Image 1 (tube, rainbow, N blue to C red):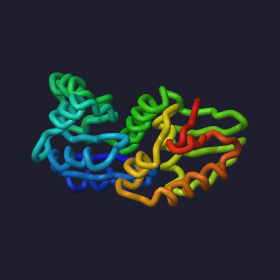
Image 2 (image 1 turned 45 degrees about the vertical axis):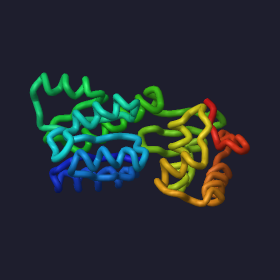
Image 3 (image 1 turned 180 degrees about the horizontal axis):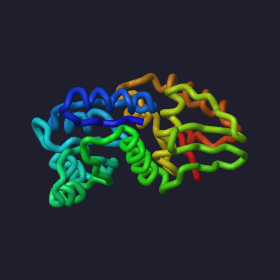
Image 4 (image 1 turned 180 degrees about the vertical axis):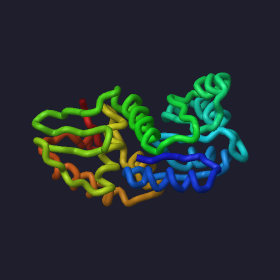
Length: 217
């Protein structure tokens, strides 16, 4: 899953980036609000982590503008502000959570997992597909009868995109945008998806010929 991180404190930005990458996220870090705002049009993200007082566009204005344009990606503010009015302003801007600095990275992890689970999986920690196939939304792992199913990084991202668009057809172009962020040979994408499907004990990924792929739950 992709995270946009807006944080102008260099060491904090690096620490958060490394921590999230160890969790399996792909992180794009920015110190300037306007550059971060531009990036939201160049790539699709699954979560925004936004500092408020940054050069260029501040975090409140950035998220407020995105919400007005219909962007519903979950967002968490990271800020040293402690005033109740600032807290209210954050939620009015459209965030789903607000974490005050300084914070422990473990707390950030818990808030991120809660935000993603609430937004993409209706608050469920374990998604049961039947026949012993379980997806854990907290660590992005698949198991079959308690045994881990080994997936490559790309296969995990493909599965994550399909779940994010649960009950909706995901086109090859959508996979290009959300995983690679650039043009990829459609034949290569289909090979990756077919490799993933072969690893699953039941056929939960359906091919809609000429349209794309879908997981129906």
